[in-house]
Length: 411
Image (cartoon, rainbow, N blue to C red; front, side, top):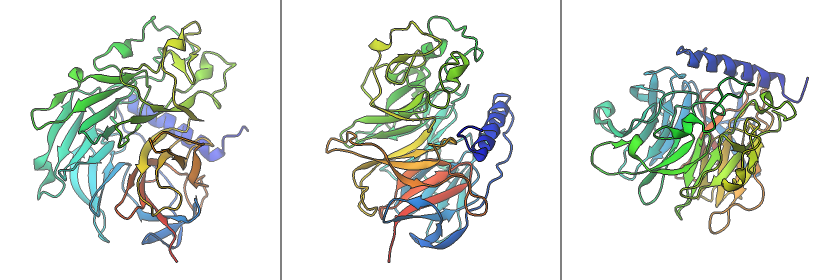
């Protein structure tokens, strides 16, 4: 057997079943996962047995949160969205307050993914096809819900919007690709010269820019495209200097067209410091401007290269610029969650940033040793990350239904 673990293959096969069910419009199977075993305390919560950077530990904040994706904080309150296992209308919004049990404060959401806390104490929630705003502290949060952005795509492999808010009030929105690599049938390239997805309105594989205001909802088909050629920018953040940063989930099955290419090693996921108006090459190019096997003669030199190559199939889903000082050695670092099931996934990494928030050095593991260990812990499935007032970092796990907390070790 090759370097994939048996547990990795189990997750992979389960993912194929789930994707097939999703494509057919049916619910994926329920997630069977191991519980975390705990010993001691970390950040005020039971400590789990994971490896983490010196001076840090990982605590188990909550379990049984369904299929949690986004996480945000308002003051000391924590908000988590449950995607509803990809079933339309089954999504929920949880609030965790103090030592109380997680409370469901909103139901009926359509596959919610991302969540952002606004300066006005409202929450933005990215759901299939739109972005909505709610007041989580109202007696009836559902009654306060209003559309902020409408007419986002709902079809294909990547219908869930990710988003990031800039200090100037601009909202950057990921519009993921509908397919793996504009494929018709894997292994049989039959696409036209120009990928139809890239010509949709809004184009798939792009990042949009919205200027939020108090007026009527913004129509995604009318929003300006900030950058394109980005297969699925699920991890998005904006620096204090207004630099938009994304981490892209690259394609699969690159060897289906060219067996000489290794699906284990290619393509790399990418970290991109986005340039307004730039085209990063998807689906015609991959890695550092290499033509895809479906388009071997394509001139990728005219496309914008990524800032950094990340590990292949790491599947970055969440990212933040850490501003606190509680976690030793992490101040002014970019923290990225690798959701992927393969060997270089299921971990959280940290990348040092210079004074202009540009990366220097190589990513270092922040939380690792997260392979499946029956009787101790499941395989890691980090999605979103959020910084708390005390400098600890919250992490959601969709496959495992949990909320974790990376905190400093205390005497």
